[in-house]
Image 1 (cartoon, rainbow, N blue to C red):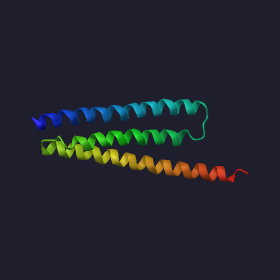
Image 2 (image 1 turned 30 degrees about the vertical axis):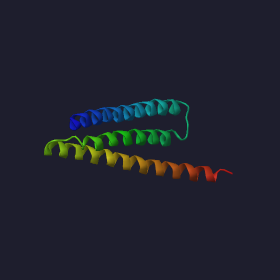
Image 3 (image 1 turned 90 degrees about the vertical axis):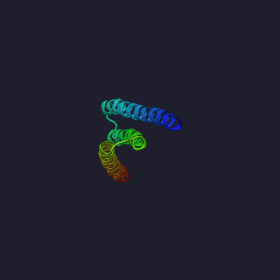
Image 4 (image 1 turned 120 degrees about the vertical axis):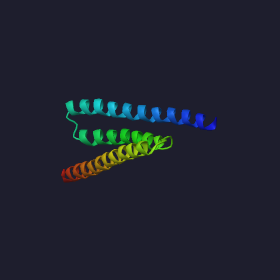
Length: 111
């Protein structure tokens, strides 16, 4: 009985994290498009930050998914998804750092 309740709670949490992640990514994309049209110099930085935040929520849902896996094939699949999402998150954070450094060096040269 407790196991069934735990499966339901984890299932709801997984769907919640997934939904929040998708919402953040979609909202960031729309905001990025609007900022691009406005020629905002920080458009790439803001878009990358939004994508990173959305991926963090989606990564959290995959970590929760490891709690309810039953077979080795599911473990391998979830591990592969976690690895890909972690790599994407790492690359986006690297892009954010690069964009921040470029923006800071550009603004420090302006008298």
